[in-house]
Image (cartoon, rainbow, N blue to C red; front, side, top):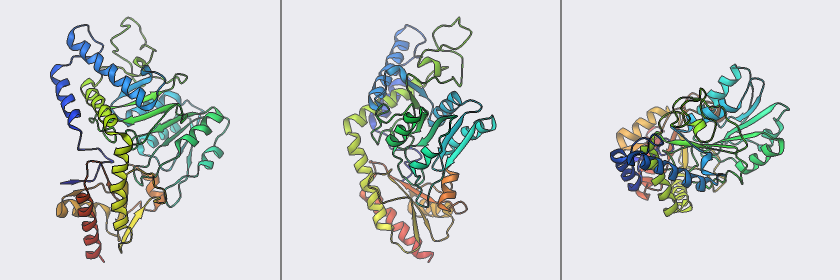
Length: 380
């Protein structure tokens, strides 16, 4: 199988990640729940991962790193933890449902929502974000990179707008964490939400948040914490405040090893390799008769994603043919990004997404190119 669905999850993990998870499964106890060796080992692994992630994202301190199960959980905690009835929130048409659905829920509960439009290339105008700010605007919530088009937002510029107006800035880094440099302090990010199983190269069931010290987030959950057992309320100190229950220490061990791999391999090297494969694929299929490519390819820096349609062929059928006839795994359909599909006018057809990992090869690219050309020629 040629795996080109890395925007959904990276299937090929570094061997050190696999080894770390296996070792954790056979040796670690419950982090923060005892003083015996197995529990202390888990506690040290979790704390070490916080240290590494704090350095990776330039967090103010390791205590501001919160572990979750994925970006969806992180975004729910962030959005529901800072937005109140009567607050105004700004987001964009580029967003995944992990952003949109919690915001719609908050809107039903009395908050206001403005959604900044995207153009036919899938870009937003940053000026529209600033122009949407009102006296009761509480937060701007947006993606760093679109999971559909691969287009990037200028997070540092949006962060500067948020700081200028005293607005909380929440960023969904699902497609960019581990591949693009993210400095939460330099970029003015108040809450960064990330997942561990995509560009971070870690296990599924891992993710987290980086929360600025001056931002108060209401806990989504309460319960066991391993400390302050006799309090009626969940502890308020970070990161315990947002980490009720047993952590996925086995997965965090793998995520910690993944950060080591990223640092040792070099994030820039990983990004350049992914983008080289993506550009090779794009340049070889962009002028094929019947193939329509979505997104803005005028900028060199972008997520390693190429999303296409072939003639008026249903995207799910194209993806099935790619897998069944060519052994190529892709993602068809709506990609949990309904507003982006509306902006691109692909709501009915959907689209087929090819997404690349630095573990992919030139041979993988050539096989995908040949498959696209053959399908397009057959359907002409």
